Image 1 (cartoon, rainbow, N blue to C red):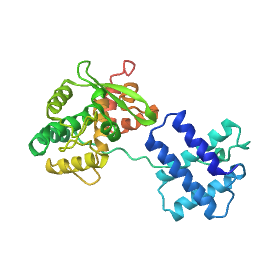
Image 2: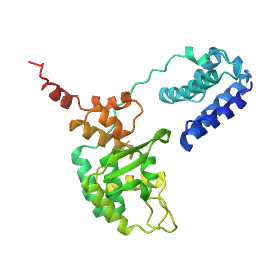
Image 3: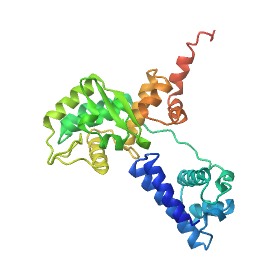
Image 4: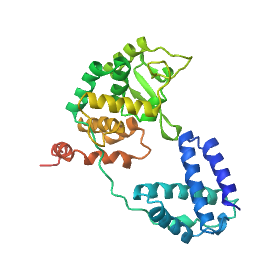
Length: 298
């Protein structure tokens, strides 16, 4: 069976059955199209049942040498290929009696520790937003929410009026894989959101929470631009500082305050606790102090 036909079935499956987000589905489709393009350009088979481990290894070389992809990028691309072949084997209707990707070795990646703001920098950033922002109520509420909840950029962009419950004091995020999670709101966040809602004036009838000064929903690029501008004006900006670092900052500060990894995993919306564990490497001294209090340590 042609790989293009299998791809179409797979994309329909992840959209309708697994309910993945449009962004994730688009990324899967792009990566599988690139793999198909590679096979076609190299004059290799386009019959999915004839694809071998050798074809996949050649694809690895192609990504590294011809596309100059980093180990992290290659690892992510290969993960999508593996999921695709797992689906084909599991369905059992595509003439595939073995999974060629099973023998594909994992790509070794040096995991970098997240860059974060210090507690002092975070406080200085928030305090000074009100002094330098052209829309202080919105920006203070928006970035306070980042630092209080550790949400992702896309999660914040997609927030609606119905996503926040100020009475019950929680916000509901829709994360990766279209999974929802509720995160408690702190009093300061509630107050900031209340102040912003008094100033929020939609140009059209929209439920999106954070809007531009003209009343239109903010884009991801728009929020990133606002952050970079405010970071520079408040004196916290440095090379490599992105809005995603606010998420890392929140999770790290919570860990330092003694929040356990399982709770941190729930707040962050991580599918696996192994992702959350990277934060334990950021402040080993803090963790060592906690371990010194172990009752069996004497």
